[in-house]
Picture 1 (tube, protein in one colour):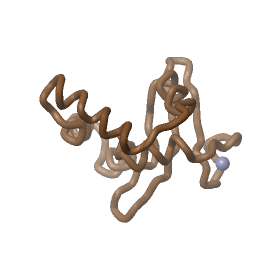
Picture 2 (cartoon, protein in one colour):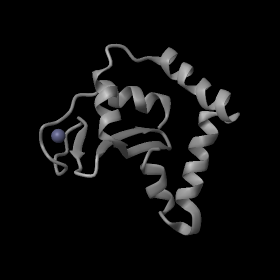
Picture 3 (tube, protein in one colour):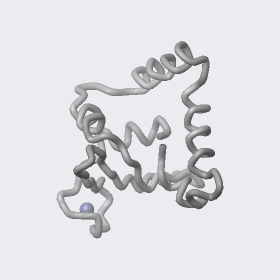
Picture 4 (spheres, rainbow, N blue to C red):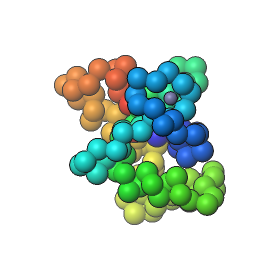
Length: 115
Ligand SMILES: [Zn+2]
């Protein structure tokens, strides 16, 4: 996910209705396999994040953090850079291209499924 998207899903209210609802809040489905599907609907120009899939435990940790801001994201960026010599942005692009390999998912789907 992009920085702004992470901050957006951390603070945006959660709707108590199901996925058919059209309101501007987040809609969450906690699956029995330990993953949560989150409708994001974050659109800024040609950048869009319609939904994401995240381990439910991480989702709960993110929502329960008392403070989370750009400083924390910048600190997290340093970990893959230090440990693997690769930036978070490159990791995101690799993930995108893996998902796009052999058209496993379409461009619009890959663009919409934020990673
Ligand atoms: Zn709703």
